[in-house]
Image (tube, rainbow, N blue to C red; front, top):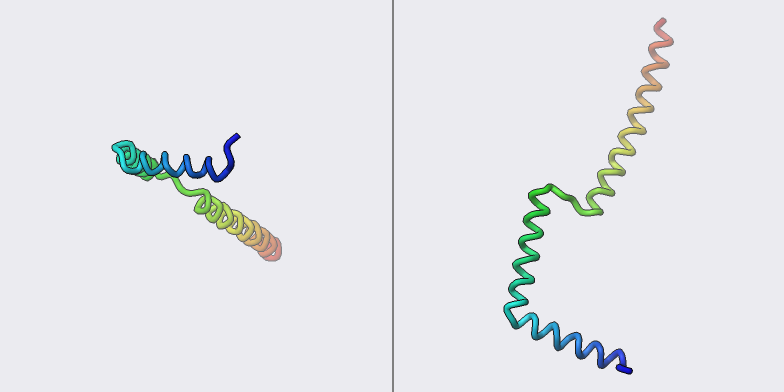
Length: 78
């Protein structure tokens, strides 16, 4: 069986060959193409999504609090 070091060495050699060949350029072009497509589709990262989810949650909590206060003030006026 191969050792981990031997497998890593083989993997690094393959990466070097691919990087120095037209396949490396194709990979870069594919990455750029996909990134552009995702940008056009207005996709966001998971981190951005999580931040906006938290903003929405706190906004809903504030809205609920304000609705409750409005309801209490309306009841006092009547």
